[in-house]
Image (cartoon, rainbow over all chains, first blue to last red; front, top):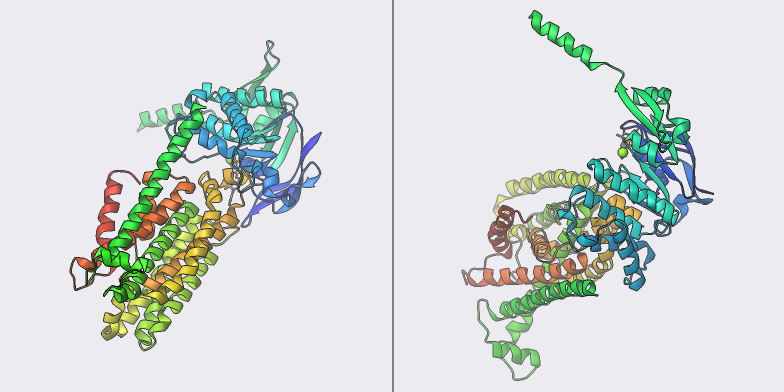
Length: 275
Length: 334
Ligand SMILES: Nc1ncnc2c1ncn2[C@@H]1O[C@H](COP(=O)(O)OP(=O)(O)O)[C@@H](O)[C@H]1O
Ligand SMILES: [Mg+2]
């Protein structure tokens, strides 16, 4: 079932067009990765889909209702966004996560037992139990990212948007985050839309990949349909070797720059020698 | 269970701090009524309040000390709340009521009255209030572009303030013989403030503080960052706008009554933050009590150190506030 649909959305800032007539359909319970070079409009697309920034043209539909005509609070009960950058927070993990219940509460309502259970579950899922009383600003990068993810989980979203959730983390924390995300899909049927930089992660953790190039959708499909040498060359300007791993059937991608820097180095060496 | 208890314990501690600040406030109010050019014995103060025996000091207490103390309390609370809101809205530790142009607006408007129309002193407060509000909204409008960006507001505020500041200086140059009468207003002082000033500021204090209390949860959401706040269903632009308006009214009413009193809106919120943390549920009441207490106490000090000469409270705030601020800075507490 289609949960989110974008019809010909464009986004402009001043006179710069960042998104150009994008059409997109996202189905329930799938993991989507958005990939593309820096500045291609990935975050902007994510923001348009998650009701952060209204597109200058076109509409986004949440289950046939216009997303931007629904109340922000109602939308917040269904969609959650993990922002690309989060400031350090002077709050304990538990306090931070409890903010996730905000959209489900009226102005004067306090958190009850059920909210507390949901908060505990979010903390469990992100393996933060031992750290729940710690101040978020004192956590390591990976732990902090998990705390922010737990905040989004406490929101109990149907669609979870993540903007480069792994970018500043070391590899084991990157995989932690990706495992949490893929478990969400399996256990709670959450639809996941994430911007990823690591193309191998995109290949192994997503059901579908959305390739963005210069504000347009270059293509959308399963990793096997969409990830090929031509795409890598046209979108990312790299040479690539792609093969399917026999053990798990997942694509492995090895990339090389189009320009060969080694040649340049020997060029410099020669020049230095001649001076 | 133990986790819930730990949470309550911490709340208990924070509750204690709020009560402590409230007691500080009551003490400083008592001192403010007790000391001045004449010192009034506590027994006479109590007698006057309980309506018991007639006191010789009744007149001074009711017509001078009590209203002046109230003005100090309300101005202190207003500026502190305005500051604590603006720091959260602008996400800038240096944001204070003056950064949005309130002081330069009130300053220029006030100076025009004091220098060009010195025979119309009753116009000072309303004109200063109007000046403060107009300039604050001008700054806001200039900073607007698809919602407001805090840095744009701060830069627009600085530019406008510099512009209006040169107007103030020009007035002072052309009418240097009349500058004397403006000093109290320019540094912020409470001398001769009485019931009429209480009446002016009280409605703004009540409405502003109630609106700020209503905004507590929203301010907490803003603290999480714009994206996250939006993702949690907050109307970020609306919160920014409405809370800036609340802060403007609070600061403008305070400034129009006491003049350009600096630092309260900057120092009090920082100190309160340091002690109780960033949760506005605690931070707001803590700032209200602390702001009111500090201003009332400073005014009392200004009245007694060089009596019978009265030092404007703005001078005391600057003299004590600035070193304290630097101390916080050195301790890396800000
Ligand atoms: N608020 C904004 N104002 C002006 N330009 C913006 C804004 N947000 C994004 N852009 C521009 O849009 C382009 C795409 O940005 P973004 O979506 O963040 O790219 P990506 O996430 O793919 O790196 C960039 O060139 C960026 O400078
Ligand atoms: Mg981005």
